[in-house]
Length: 199
Image (cartoon, rainbow, N blue to C red; front, side):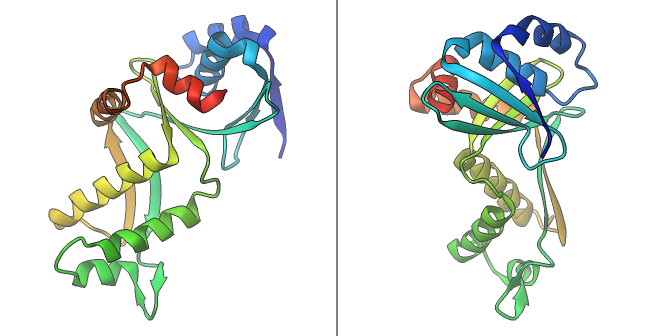
């Protein structure tokens, strides 16, 4: 697992990169945000390519934070992909169970959670959704991401749109509204949420 180390002195270079990042994945934007806001409390950031995480942050408490960055494309975030036809539950597939069920019940939710938790190798990861058009960053914990996945699958179920392979793609506007509701329910500012996650 080869990594590039990013330190506090790299902020200027990162900020320059973020201005020309229309073809990049958003990692530079996230790293620049963390270092500019919490530079005194961060030892370093490691950037990875082709791994299940994109950034690893070491804070001054000697703790590590694992970050997955998802960049929007044409107004949508592709959060995850699931082959529910290959997920076996007992002697049936999860796809069959969903299609035969009269409603999206707690049993189905439980099996979806099992599948999601298995696929998300690092349950304590921070997910940062990067709106490439607005340059906005939305930091979410794994629970919030799972809530979004469940909401999307239930929406599809109610409209008869469940396929054997499901790509969880949500509009940037949905995430923008989700984030606003999250801040209101927690009575926190974006900076306070970032701080609670990073330091």
